[in-house]
Structure formats: C-alpha cells, structure tokens
Length: 217
Image (cartoon, rainbow, N blue to C red):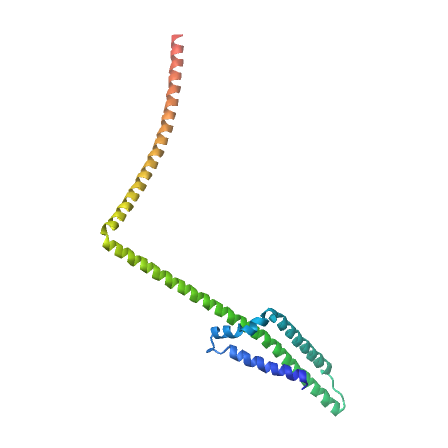
C-alpha cells in the first residue's frame, strides 16, 4: 500500500473511532459542546468549512482514481499466468482503495452531521432549561403575590368586601347601560312609527278635504 493510501486508511480508522465516541450514550451533549467549541476550534472555525470542503475534494479525487483503476483492470484476461496474477492483484488493490476512499468520504459526512446534531441538541437543552427557570421564577412570583394578597385581605377584611361591591356596581352599571341601549332602540322604533302614523293622518285629512269640496260643489 502506498503512502497516500496508508494515510487515508489511517484516517478512516480515526473516523471510525470518532464516530464510536460520538454515539456513546454516557458522554452528554454538554461535554461535547465544550470539546467542539474549544478555543482552538473557535480559532479555526471561520475556515473550518473551507478545510472540510478541500478535504472532501481530495477524497473524491482519490475515489475517482480508484474507480479509474478498477475500470482499467476489469475484464482483462491475459493468457500469461504471471500477467494475469499481476492484473488481478492490481484490480484487488483498486477495489480496496475504492472502498477505503468511499468509506472515508462517507464517515466524514457522518461525523460532520453528528457534530451539528450534538450542538443543536445542546442548544435546545439550554433553551429548555432557561425556559424552565423562567417558568419556575414566574410561578414563585405568582405564589408570592397571592400570599401577599391573602395576608392583606386577612389584615384588612373590608378591602375584600369593597372589591366585591365595586364588581357588583360595575355589573349593575353594565346592566343599566344595556337597558338604556335597548330603550333608545325602542324609542327609535316608536319615532319611526309615529312618523308613519302622522303621514297617514295627513293623507286621510287630505282625502277628507277633497270629499268636502266635492260635496259642497
């Protein structure tokens, strides 16, 4: 195995080890957050995507080279035994390199995705904890206010009766306002009816005047 393929195979084993660490259940997202957001990673974080894309391009080039070697030595059946043995050996190496490059490329994407999911999980857990703290604080404040109201009511019982009287007056005022509104509506109806009656009376008076004029003539 040449040096470049030895390096890629070593990196493949390293990726497999990292994936096993990432999926271990006893390592929490909080610990991974501190590891993945270490100061050294933050220093290179701005160019991390560029480095990752360059590395993926290198793996893709090695993958394509292994595919080219596979196509080159596939389907050849020389009559010489030694030549056939060399051809099969090169085909086996190209297939081995193909699997090494393909798995290294796949594991790189898996590690990137796992790291993103772990950081997202930690952010979600942090937001939930913050929301829980706010909810507990709001509950405590509400309980404190209710206790203070009860103590105030016990110290000054008339205040509770006064509040009830105010509510009763408000309800009575609302009831009277509704009655006034309905009375105004009834008054409008009566005005319209009186107008219609007055118009009919005028018409009747006019008819009576016409009949008188006819009888006198």
